[in-house]
Length: 63
Image 1: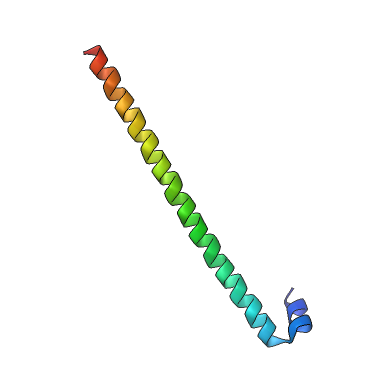
Image 2: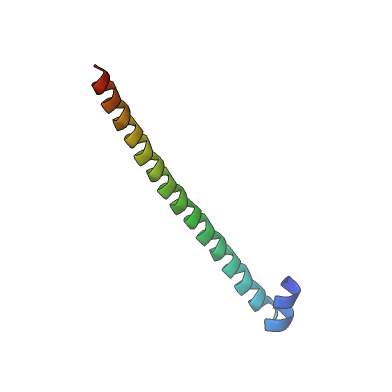
């Protein structure tokens, strides 16, 4: 791929552009993964809160 970029688009400048695009793409993937993990963490917290509330209701009904 490096040779393709260097030959087709004008040498080192194209290679640097490709490298920059690749780096920013990696940053985008990292940010996307962090957002996804935050959303999943929030969903797990809500689910845990729901089960905690259900347990309390169940315990209250037994007393």
